[in-house]
Image 1 (cartoon, rainbow, N blue to C red):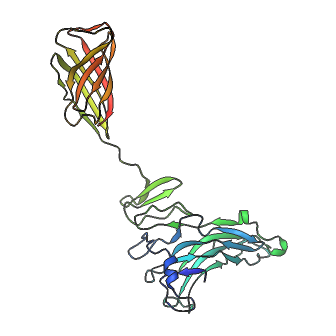
Image 2: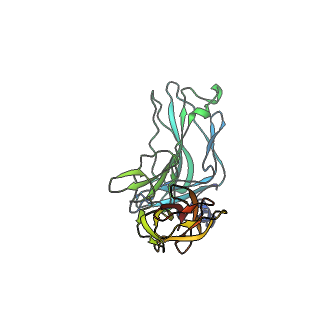
Image 3: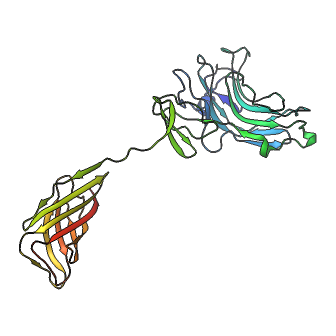
Length: 333
C-alpha cells in the first residue's frame, strides 16, 4: 500500500494502520470554515511532482496532502510513499480533452462506493473544441491536469509532457502558518489576520474589507526630545533629538558663556563638558560625535551617562565666549 490515509476505518486490506497514522500529515489544519479545512499539498521538497514516464504514462512522485470531504466527513491526511504511474487513455479522434490527476478518498461510511480506500486517479475530461478541466468527484484534490491532443496514442508518439502538464497543486499549512504559493490565488481567507505568500509577497486577509492586502510591518514610531541641560560655562540655545526604533540622532547647540577656551597645539581640550542629555536618551556605550563653531571643527563624545563633552578642536585655536557650538551624532540607545 503506497497511498495512505489517516482517519479511515481500520482493518484490512486498505484501512488505517499505525504506519499510516505516522506518515500522514496530522496537525495540518488551516481552516476554511467552522468545521472545514483548507485541503492541499504539504510543502517540502517537490511533493507529488508529475513527470512523463512514457508515451501515454505519467508518474506522480511522493508527497503528502490533506483531502477535505464533506463538512460531516472532515479532512483526510494522505501520504504517497512510493511514486505512482498512471496510464492516460488515447485521445479522441476529433477533439482534445483535459484529464486531471487527483487524490481521492473513498469512505464507505459517507459515500456510495462501498469501500474504504485512498488512491491516485485520473479523472477523464470531455473531448470538445475548447476543452475544460473535468468536475471532480467528492473527497478529491486536483493535483495536475493533462491536455490530451486529438488522436494521441502510443502509436502516434503519445503526449508531449513538457507542454501537456498543468500544475494544479495548491498548498496548505498548519493553523496560523503562512500558506505557501501554489496554483490559484482567488480563494478567500478564513479569518482576519491569516497570511499567505504570493510570488514572494506576504499578504494578510482583511476580514472587514473582505480581501487580501499586501502586508507591511508597522513603522517604528518617531519620538522627539527637547530637554538637554547646559553644563557650567555654557547655555543651550537649541536641542533636538529624534528616535526611530532604537536609533537616535540629535543636534545640540550651545553658546559659550564663560571665558574663552584656549586649545593647545595638540588639539586636545581635556573633555570640556557642554551639556547633558535627558534620561531615556542616553546611549548604551560611549559615542563619538562631530562639533563645529563656524571657525573650526572638532570632535565630541556622548558618554553613557548622557554627558556631552568637547574632546578636540583646531590645534592652537580657541573657543571664544559668545560663540555657538553645534554638536551632532547618531547612536543606539
